[in-house]
Amino acid sequence: MTDRIELTAALDALLQPERFKDYCPNGLQVEGRLPVRKLVSGVTASLALIEAAINAKADAILVHHGLFWRGHDGRVTGWMKQRLQALLAADINLYAYHLPMDAHPTLGNNAQLAKQLGWEPTEGSAGVFGEQDLGRLAAVNYTDASELAQHLKLTLKTHVTAIQASSIAIKKIAWCTGGAQSYFEAAIAAGADAFVTGEISEAQTHYAREMGVAYLACGHHATESFGAPAVGEYIAQVLGVVHEFIHIDNPA
Image (cartoon, rainbow, N blue to C red; front, side, top):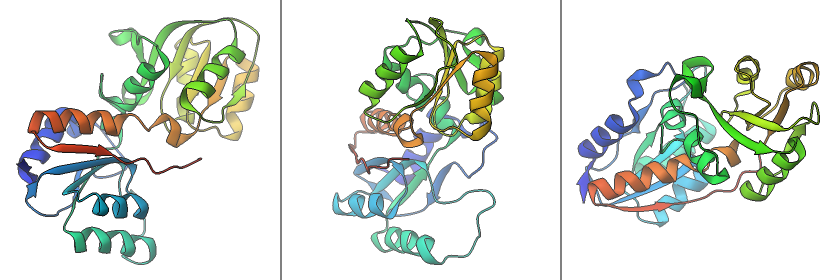
């Protein structure tokens, strides 16, 4: 058993949100009860996750995608009212870490995605790219983008949109989980043969074809399903609380 104060301090110390310029407030977003015996982790603070956490008798919820984002309407109506009402009525703490949960070198979404796929991230400055050094690089050995796409599809159990720009072997791979379309040009500049992320926009198809670098989009949710449970389990062991990851399916 721990409490909200200790849990907040432990998560902030681990994920270091002060290091990042982000689109949302990171850390404790909704204050609940002081004692914490059980921590539930999930990808997004949806009503489905909140209700499942309440049924699981959670005292705190840890997510990657929280409730509050830059540019959102600040009024508490509709879906926002429903989610906040459920949290406050159950007196549950909600923690959200966006870029800090992507970037943690061993527990973050990028590191955990690599672990799932058997990639060994390149160490040091040679292994990062893109804004705030969020993108990662690794040496790999795929005969071509088709083999890589199949590996992604089978391992992540997801649909893969693959722009196979050429038939060259994939020896250097770049990746950044979630909606990291804007990192593609930096990945190309870093010398990658292929770039893996969650989403694709119209422009990336043309960049891939013109630059001869494969682009593979595996789903925002599918690429970011591993950081929250890894962080949650680690923190639970450190603080001596029960942890449960609750997966809410999302095809996007």
